[in-house]
Image (tube, rainbow, N blue to C red; front, side):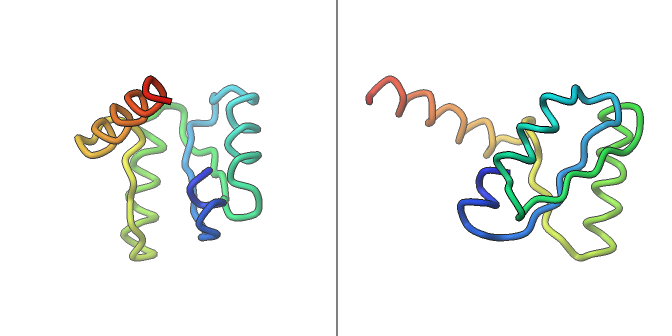
Length: 85
């Protein structure tokens, strides 16, 4: 969400319906008007399936939330940058 707002590009974020309201509010706050949050399904897997179907239909890119090697690598360098600051 933050990256969408920072780069001023539109993004759609899928989250399960039971996602805590505070988390949804934070995502909307960081994404500003650039992010559309969609609460779908009861589980992560349900919302993941909806996100993949959306990407296929819209020919949109999918950015994994946490379990992709490039995402993990990026999170690791953020930690290093914080320690070096």
